[in-house]
Image (cartoon, rainbow, N blue to C red; front, side, top):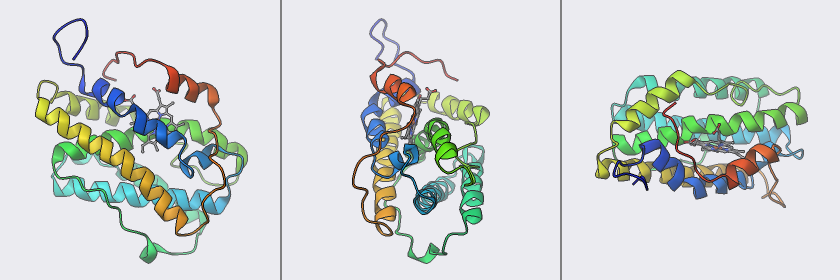
Length: 224
Ligand code: HEM
């Protein structure tokens, strides 16, 4: 609830606030943070992209089962990930991909998952700068794509339709929390099925952007 009036906070503001901790955990995630490190190798880059791709595909399949608007689909991001993975010519191991264990039991939980995965494009832009510097020859269709503003504002509109509905807000939040947690867990599980765990947590490159993000008090947001 907004401090100054009895209006409920926007759903997007509530999500940003309530998922802040689990989001920041991903900044220090042993594998995801490698994308922001000078220690990143091509094989690790490929494995992380594969984890993203497989996880995004799982959420899209669940969304289709819940008849969610196809305009919110993660297909453009999946296509970019696939283009990157294909041009890295990694060994084929689709059969050995571990299953994703994210369970989304309602269309509102899927909306929460879409918030997380579409929102991941903001972090991708930060990480893109490092990958470009460290591995200049690798394809970056996914990391280099800017966030799709039209799709993001449609998602926000969809979220705000539930602004006054407490049960729906809780369901969306539950989907978002589970997605953040399972995403990190999945990237670790997939990478560690191939490589030994990294010896240290790599700090992300754009300390200024990230520090600002980590320390700034959440501000009221507009809906775009
Ligand atoms: C080291 C990795 C990451 C960094 C450095 C990072 C950084 C950022 C930054 C700076 C923003 C704010 C963008 C802005 O306000 O203009 C942001 C937003 C966001 N990120 Fe991340 N991120 C990372 C990983 C991820 C991942 C892996 C996910 C999801 C799986 C994710 C989900 C989100 C979401 C949902 C938002 C939107 C929050 C909102 O404003 O409502 N991030 N991220």
